[in-house]
Length: 316
Image (cartoon, rainbow, N blue to C red; front, side, top):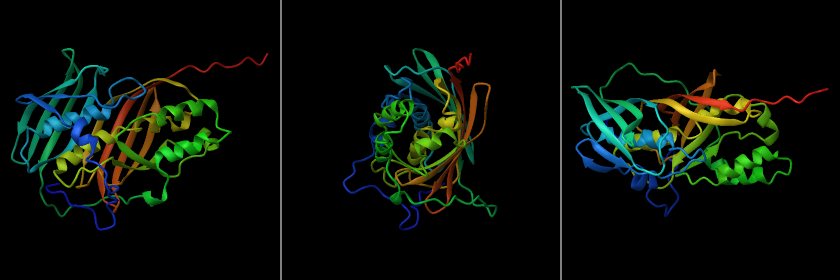
């Protein structure tokens, strides 16, 4: 990933005319330097959980780590743990440790701190690109292009207008509609209300950052992808279990592997699946595809999922 190559003509799915520079660059991922390898990040989006959004912490930590490596080194993987709930009322401090600087690979460790305690532990590896004849990838799924699909707000409005929609789904959809998230989403094959009772732990949607990021540095696009990657990811494990009411759900860890250059402000297909759930935990895997069929990013995450016990009605 030594340089950022735009997808082929007609594949970019660029931003609407007059769209402003992405708030993800100007605010969310714009860290304040306090000292060498010490940065402060502000909180932007308030999730319904009232906890810090995990994608924000991952993205900000990658920004901090990337500032400590040379321009020709690009991130190829990151692994992190969420160890404490974040406080939305105070900024996050990011301490970068230059764990190793090598000729081909460099490793950076980042600790995110609030109130003097770590809330998040992160490691990223950066690589000096090297050509190789050994190359392969799986094929991208065949799906409708984003231009043929409803945007998220229109789709939710359509659901809410359905008189047969159950109240428990109506409450959840109203909460989703109220979120001010700096990303755009278009679902592939969105389920009808009647299909919600019988779903597989799989979903696909087109996603991109709102606003214009520009070609710029591939590192910044990777940071934006880190922010995007956590959105609705763990909920893939809940899709077959709509009959359960979740009362606690948080990410435990998050991993990403970056394979090819991409633009996070152009439409990418996010293919998500959950191969397993049990023991109040769920595992999810994801792949971000460029529109031209190139596999750009792979992701994995495990999280805690606790549901309220079901009360069985007596038949006596």
